[in-house]
Image (cartoon, rainbow, N blue to C red; front, side):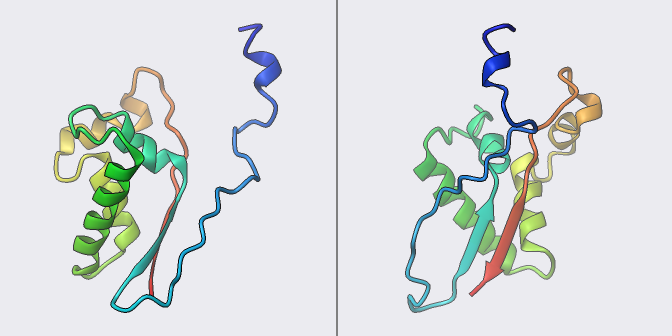
Length: 116
């Protein structure tokens, strides 16, 4: 714990240093912009049953999920978050609710999906 305390500078562990990537949004076709916190990425990265162990694999999966969700009426970001939590597997989803977790905490997760 004594090694950790000096590194614990800005609770709740959110930095104002954005990871910025410039993308040409004028590309032809229907598209969308996905903005999310690392909490969403962690849901995929630490779920060993999915086999998504690189950022490229996670990004490709997220794009597929958003494309599927955009075909449905409703909130595409919520569709993506639900899929990340476990989709239609109610037991898996319920295990990720903080009350039922051993650790009693969950990383903050923010998801925004904007159609272009």
